[in-house]
Length: 402
Image (cartoon, rainbow, N blue to C red; front, side, top):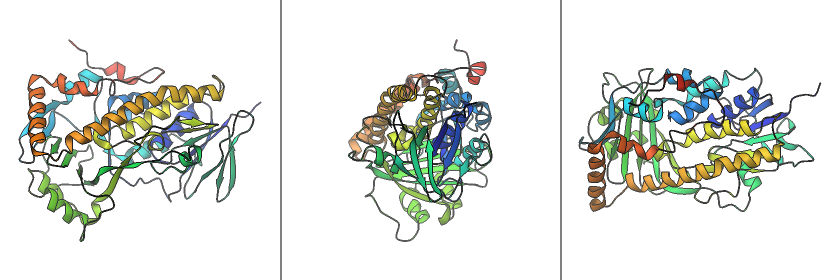
């Protein structure tokens, strides 16, 4: 009996693990190579929209993650003084897109994904490099400190600074600075009781959201030069930038320790890659289409990539070269459009011009008063996406539209 084909996934983040689980379920023998010493992610929270939850349905995890939804009631956009620009309810979102928005810690999702893989699938402290992308006549080869691995498929899920991408497309300019940096914390906040919200100021934004486990996920962003760092600590920098904004922002900052605050410059791929595959190698997530976080779709699109890749690269479907071409054809137009929209939204919510801010805020408030459906319409074509195979567990609980 012929052995199942082998896949090597370079990178053990959310996209890489989702790809590993999806490929394993399609009959591939999978090895995940993660250069870090553990799968504990460097990061904080992640927002999963109905599109990625339906993708997770394909590998049996959608409802497990939906059960972690903590956002109930209203939320929306505010000004630094506390005035609500728009209100959006969880019910309206679920009705329009067929499911909830789930905010959770990245570590929770990583743990759930890793639990779906056979023991020994994931190798940590495993620095990997693409030695040969392979072709129709030879397997791809990946070099590791323990020797080379051959595979019928290699998945480059190694993030925004992807070495696999650089090997495939050495002439591509790579990621560029998006013009702002972010801070993130996931912490307990005693006595916290507030609606999920994002607040837009002048060249700065803040978001605060409760998690199901009782902690609070908060993020901030500001237009600052790349490579900067606070002269004291990043918590003190948050006090300087956001300490006089509306409640509960000062209290959240006050509950954080300096070591709780993560700071990262934001980069994105401004020039789309010519393809998301070459030879026997496919790129997913930030390695293929890194985007600003302003739509909350970076991780969601990585999950979509993984499911679509496994669908087209199934060992008993079309030849791999045709499957990878179909993967690029399915994913490149969608992710390019979403990435461009994320850049446009960043220009809007990180605006510095005072006259522009006045017009922006007035427009947001007017749209919100006209009805929540108008505001949610900006996610049409994004959050309503469905994977290329059924069933979708979310269909059984979809809120019906009158």
